Image (cartoon, rainbow, N blue to C red):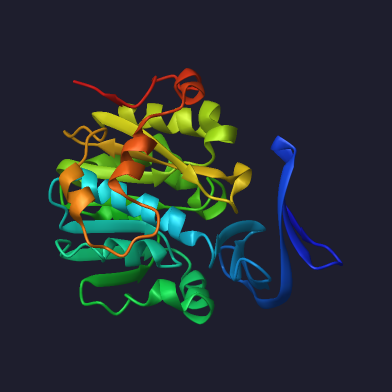
Length: 294
């Protein structure tokens, strides 16, 4: 739930957790009702432009690098040699930009159901779309679940589920049946990563269920990586990795330490630290800490 108060503060209220997050805005730049969701863009006084979908903060200029780097680089440095990458969701194109920083990646396909998100990003977040015309990039506006259904067996190396919250258009992306289909299209040694909500608010629910369902879907290992995200509920967010015949609790540390990518948050040390789950997250997870099943 969100509201715009008379004193020009945009506020997203998290009723179920008795908390809220606010940003002072200077003007509304866009208000569009697409076929799938309500999209707004605001200019804020301290966080640059702000994108909101169905009342929920999606990204700001100031801190989107945290999310985009952490949903992309841990998975890519975990896979031994990622060449074929698919992104489901991610219409703002920030994740696509991060994936394309890896020169060994040969093709990236992004599938988002709502083209209006990409159009808004082109207008108001130009730094996120600067790699869209790369020859290795393919942008599709379609149903990501159907795309996965139609994809050949064992055809991709890394699958990134860059979805909104598990309601509305993104609800199907958190279902066990969909995870099984994701497992089918990954090659042996493949890595899947999915945004998995707030460690503080959702470890005992969404995160625990997602980790359990990934293992039920046939994945051999899971790892949840928390990281700061000031504009999201609780100011703390996470991604969860799943591996097919690979341990996602290990990664190519030498490559992560020696890369020359112009990153602002991800590093070999940040990756190592994120793999060390806090005790409360281990306690609240039915499948325990970050694990590898043999």
